[in-house]
Length: 628
Image (tube, rainbow, N blue to C red; front, side):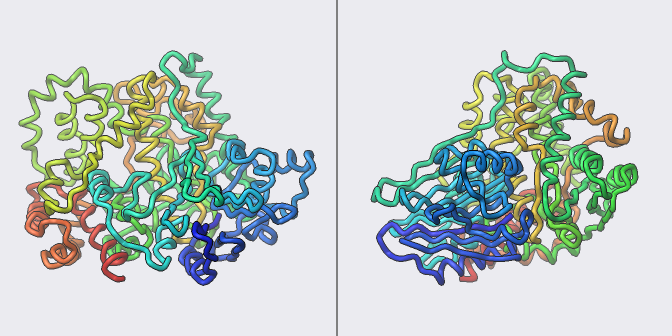
């Protein structure tokens, strides 16, 4: 696991070694064990390394036998041993035992198509000196990040924005379309970034630039696009047969994800996904597995009890911690960690549990992807119910909209009941947008200063993904939107930045092709039926987990934001979102922000998600724009 960065000169100039080193130093947290670089003939590659496999010999960059091809990689290739054997049989000589070295030799044999042979999570940069070609590649689900910046002078890339920012002349110009989507979703979907001049490489894509082709531009090709099968091609075996196969596939994935030359733990939230990983890791490990949990004093957000049941059953080496509102001290740190505005409140517990885990291990398994692949969200059941209840929902909407928002369960009520009646009569993708949005279009209009609006309708990002899955059943198409947008740029970003900020490698076994390809071929009746979510996975792992886990309701890995903003965090919110500060930043109407704070604190309305997004943006802006 590493952080990578680099520069390709497009105007014949040499790469400045000092700038490259400065970029690489910005990624020190991603790889504190060692750093290296390669600079030659107008190209520079650099990496910071967190040593996981081949601790002594795996430093990067790594070259082929004659030094004409160099590679840096952020990630892990879980089938590298099998690939290594194939390469050696075909005559390649490998100098290390690392997973990264197989990449240069695979490229020699297969060209850019080598990425299709990889089982793993990765962001790769490869320089072919003979062809004078730079290749950038990202894994099929976008588990590992990769940003790139194209100017008339150079093509540069990095694992995080904070490295690109260190380039001389970097323009920190806010992209209004990115800010518009951020307020809609609380994160910024690919290919957008908060800065106009930078883009994210989409998941499952390869970018190539042939240096001798002048202004031909970067060519981006998709090599993998995980998608649900068409409605007539779903698996037809019995539930029992499918459950047996799923368990075998999950165990195979966990076995692969445990490959490391350092100890591997499990981030154990208490939900069915992380509990499944803890159980399977324990079955595969000779020594007790280390597990890590955090919780809250507010019971509705605390799953430590469930986590302990699994820890006790498998006699794991269990560690836990309680998160309290003094976590406010983390907010400026998180603004620096997430170098784009990122307002998923669960970033706080994810950062803290990563911090806890890093005290004991370098690698931890995490359950991302299980909900999107196997139907874990309550609103999936809502999508099935909406067509049947749309008339009733419309009739009771005025009554539901007037329900108070001051109770302890206000956020849940607002997200479920109120949003259900608002969206029930809409088309599926419009309904999904209503259920997922933070600021509505009307809310953004009221908030923005008129000259700061973006031209992009965030709903169009969802629509474009939705169209791609035509032919699959309706719920599978909605889940595919989550898989390609909300998982990639919310859940995976959250976990990557929080873990790597603590120099911890987080691995996600549910997104292994062995598991994901199976999940995408399942009929939705084995995922969601009536109000029951994750049907097949509950059936598959029932022999392994306590009944309380199998039958338990999903709680989510979050924090009591609404309560904290009315109480302990209110002073911070009023300071960071003061009229003077909002006016100085220049994007929003100060009177609108103040009215939202007053309304939320009074308990008349729940603006917690909206205020959190504004709070995070203001902190980020001061860190990355105002501070320059």
